[in-house]
Image (cartoon, rainbow, N blue to C red):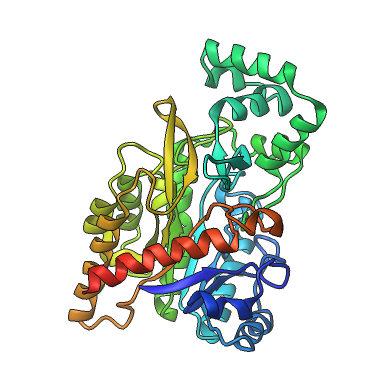
Length: 393
C-alpha cells in the first residue's frame, strides 16, 4: 500500500519537509479554508499542489471534499451545493487528483469527549466516554428529547457529574465535542448545534440513507466519467449521537450503499478504528466482501472499555494493540492489491495512512493537533510498514 500522511495545510504543526525522514510516500490533505458547499477551483487546488511539490510530495488523496449539511438534509440550497460539488470534482480531475474521501455524518463529525487522556505509559490518547457525552447532551446542550436516549442510571450519573464540574471543565467538554476536531467539516457553537438539530426533524435512518444514495446518484457518475474514485468514511463513532441517525456504521451499510449506486467510482474508505469500535466488526471480512471498492484505508486501532453494549466507551489504542486484528487486516488488503494487479487495474495500489496516533515523548509538549501528533503516528506507520513488509515477503 502507498504510505501516506495526513497534512492539514499551512497551519499544520508538522513541517512537510520533515516527513521525508518518516518515510512518507504521499500526502492526504484538503482545502479546509473553503466552506462546505462552496466550490473548489483549479486555482485553489494548484496552490496547494505547489506547496506540496515544493517539499517533494504529490497530493495523493483529498480528505475531505465535505458534503454540506444542506445536501445531507436536502435543504433549499441542495441543488446549488450539488453543482458546486460536481464542479469541484471536475477541477480536481483536471489537476490530476484521483481519490476523494468524504463522510455523511449528520452535524457532528468524528467525536471524542477527552482529547488527551493520560495513559499508563506516560503518553496521552483520545477517548470517548458515553457518560461524558450524556453530561453534554443533557445539561450543557440541554436537548429537549435527550432524556429519552439514556437509561435512568445514566441520567442520574450525568446529573451528579455535571454538578461536580467547574465552569472550565464544562467549557472544555463542550469544546471537545462541538468546536471541530482536526479535519471536521464544520466548527459549531452551542446555538448552531441546537438550530441544526431542527433541520433533522423527520429524518429517520432510512431517509438519511436515501439522501446519501441521492447524493451518490448525482456525483458518482460524474466521478466515474472523470476517472475519479469517491470513498465514504464511516461514522465515528459508529452509533447515533444527539438522537440523530448514522448510516455508515457497519459492513452491511457499506454493501447496501455501494450496491445502490453500483459504479466503480462509488467506493469505501476502510477506517479500522471507526468501524472497530463495534464488537461485531470484522475488518478482514470487510475486505473480502468489498475489497474491489476500497479506494482508501485508515489504519488505526481502538480499544473498547465497556459501558453500553451498543454505545461503548473506547480510547485510541496504539496501532497494534486495540480490538482490530491489524495483521489479518493488512494481509487481506495486500491480497486484494495482488488480485487487482493480476487483472491489470491501474489503481491496484491502495493509499493508506496511519490514523490517530497517541501523544508520545516530544508530542506531549509540541502542541500538535488532537489525534495527529508526529511521534505517535510515526510509531504507528513504522509498525504498519513492518506488517506490510512481512506480508509481502
